[in-house]
Image 1 (spheres, helix red, strand yellow):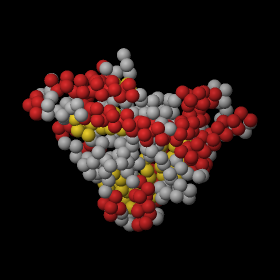
Image 2 (image 1 turned 135 degrees about the vertical axis):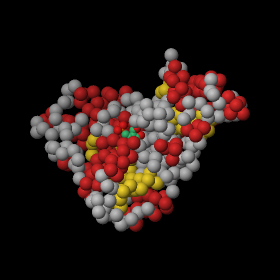
Image 3 (image 1 turned 30 degrees about the vertical axis):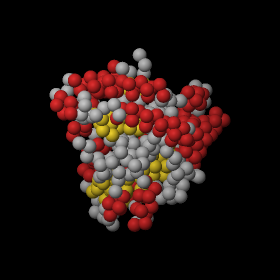
Image 4 (image 1 turned 120 degrees about the horizontal axis):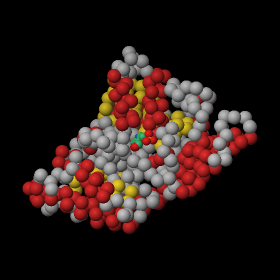
Length: 397
Ligand code: PLP
């Protein structure tokens, strides 16, 4: 059976070159990078090289602004909790602004802070999944300590104007900190944090062809926060714990490869994504595009299939070896419709039948052709057993 992996926003396959680069650090170069003897110089130098590669990937000059973490979730938690712990108090500095479409690793931290007495304003998106920046800025109060907006949405691929948000926030009050969840932007669009007003930017290696279990957090020079991983003096005492050398090396190499492949991502991956999108939409009267933002990452499309159950679509596609998803991997298994699609006011007729297809630089034309053939077949098959025969007939199914 063919296997067509179209779930690259959930995770990506490890690039062979990345695997090759990390293997010596799993086997021979195992010294603790904090130790004093020669082999430790090899591992600590490898970590510093990866730090330079990540700095270059994120468009910053100073590698010291990069902290290694265990994943995107840890990076987000470090930034948000670190700011609240350092600058927040429940009386006068207790307000945070974010969006309704953030990833659960960000939203659940805010829900938890609300339980502790903090006030959080959630900014919505329009029907195209776009943000109203003026509205966001108008919510700033003297109590605001943090504004947090993701760079690219994991479900619909919308790109948010984070540089503009950050400079407008600082124009209003330079003490407010700005956190950007960049997990779904890294490797898909160019990133330039140098000279931006963004204080914190999180990334996760397994979204750009390195292994799971390693991430990074950019912290602007001079920006303070309270570290929550306490222990040794690793990472400049900002994130204690022996560094995961092999995975950090892997992330550095993956970042370099991803940066080199950006042009391909923006042209060829986008071409294949557009071909898939048009190929499906043109064959099915009940297919509606959810990824409608004017600016979006090149690899993602989200399509709603009216009157068809999303979980069934995924099961049928799975039988054909096509792997996609109905939203965030962290919320799959939940029957609640996606919070992103609800924020975008996707009509209930396709809310439960929305599927995300996400490509990578390893996706081939042949795979896309196969998906264009099989997805409509599956939808037509499911239309025959749907209780909404009349509505589907009217849509030509
Ligand atoms: N932020 C976004 C936008 C994501 O899509 C994800 C993962 O899907 C994360 C954060 C969490 O990253 P990790 O899986 O490395 O914890």
